[in-house]
Length: 169
Image (cartoon, rainbow, N blue to C red; front, side, top):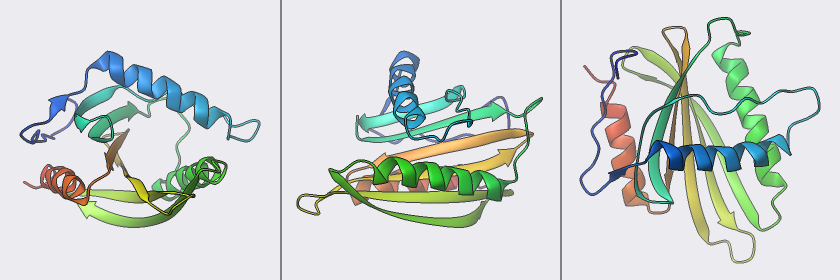
């Protein structure tokens, strides 16, 4: 990444997600989120993509970096609480799903991150459908975000390992 000192290894067998595909997915997600946000809160589209790669449409990694220059600043804790509320409001309104949400703080390299993990299940038979892990940190006056989504624990382990190693020096 030429915006800050960061490199991530793309695991063997994964393909880079094309920018057009990411924009299409982000548009769908933004439309769904806007339906759940209280009046008066403005949700912007997703910031520019740094890199995204996938095994398939359910098992992927993507990251972005949004400049905060000229924008209202939130603490990382305020951002975490807002994101958590948004996720809870969104998933609790989907009758076909059940979910478990956990959050934690961690340090990767010299950066302080928060992580929100959402495990999504079928409401009909409690079958695990997807795990979504969201990581956010302030880096160089920008918000760095990473999303790891997977249906198989083994895929999650690979994506998490690569992400965490990417911040080691």
